[in-house]
Amino acid sequence: MSSSAASAYARVATTTASPRDIEAQTLLKAANKLQDAINSADPLSEQTMQALMFNRKLWTIFLSEAMRDTNPQPLDVRQKIANISVFVLSQTAALQAAPQFDHFRPLIEINRNIAAGLSGRP
Image (cartoon, rainbow, N blue to C red):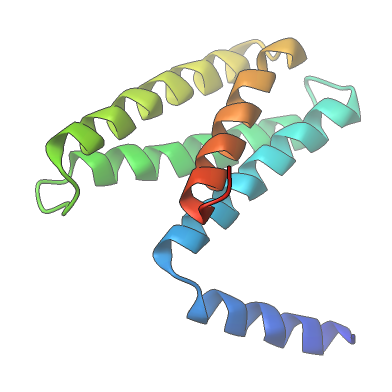
């Protein structure tokens, strides 16, 4: 497949995907970026910092949406999302200050597990 054909396919896939699918894909993207950072073997690399920043931005959006009064989700679901978001954000901020690859695994697993749930996969 040519590069332009692949780009066109990606645009169509994104425009036809459900919000849950987009969230799942973005969580997997964040997990993959974190895993790639671990694989780079340099905790202070630009790649590591970008992976952490991407994860932080993503979870900031989730937290903001969970706290939004007009969010249609039940309050208990929103509270659980907010609690997970606060945990992920605090861990991500700590790793930005002092990256330790052994502490990346929980963030990767959270992202992958929630993505699987959003996608309806076990």
